[in-house]
Length: 101
Image (cartoon, rainbow, N blue to C red):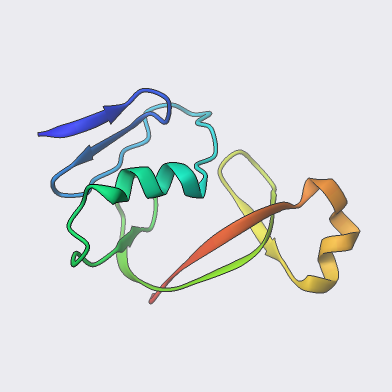
């Protein structure tokens, strides 16, 4: 069994599997992620999926904040503190989830 989120186009099951089914999904915010995780067992480990095809997985190692600039709708880069002013409003405040590998 699982829960389908129409607004984010993801399917959350007891195996904690999320699948993107649309090309242009809205960017997930901390509020939405918190809502999804709230009802789950807090002792589960967090695993990051490498890509939408499931070509690799890695446990979550760290979390930090920074600014992000998208190069495409599915890829971009994180800015250093020095670069933030250079990019202005193009840089979005972000939470970065860092995998072990």
